[in-house]
Length: 296
Ligand SMILES: [Zn+2]
Image (cartoon, rainbow, N blue to C red; front, side):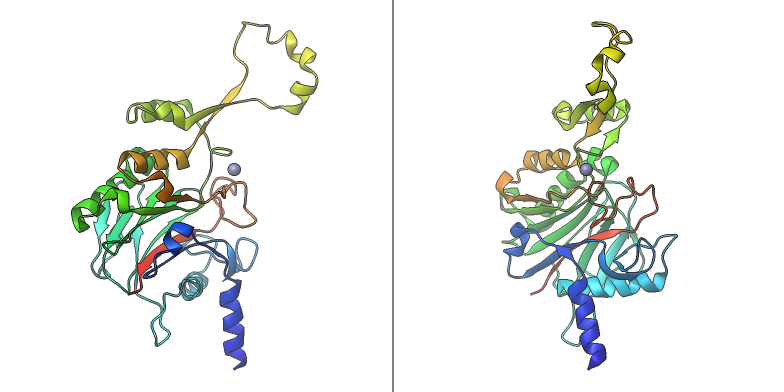
């Protein structure tokens, strides 16, 4: 009994994020993990690392996955975790239809299914985990969208897969975009904008030029005046990419309704107290998971 109480507490400690859009579908279960409530000793202790990394042990990761699945409610009546499918993610636009747990690992960045009792999951730590569902045709999908996958139109193609595989009308689809690196922190080089301009007519709306906010410079502008006389040279600026907006625009262009798109307001890089950020933590970090399944 003592062990049972302890394990119950463990599961309650696992902190997950859920979207209103998907939570309203009675047959669906979903969630985005955070870094809190796990058993990993790496990454500050009690971390819910869900990806195989250099710093963590496989044992901790598998225990964390079990805790996360229990917290999601993805367990059989006998108490076993549901079978789950995860991909070897390669920042592509490759999408698989999954009818059963594949015998060998699959490579790609998106999955769709209409089978009950299977969890589809993607791992991320700055890239966006994106979950889709068709409430009418009982189908779900999970996608991994970093800048490369976004450039390759992974979520737009994801909507296309729903149409093709399940006959979905994009206007019926509901979407949850989980936590990832937001515009506030996602500094990129100029060639990103060139690449996005080559793909999207609205590319310029996805980038923001952030001017130097050096406090010394702002407080004593005269000190810097002679260095930068009016009309001579540009003030230092940085380019930031809005990955969330890029994916939202793709979904809209594919026919998804704006009110059916839920977006987590949490930026991974701003919130390393709650989330893992590959960039902020300089690669020494865990992985979170976005997961979705049909409960039936
Ligand atoms: Zn941020």
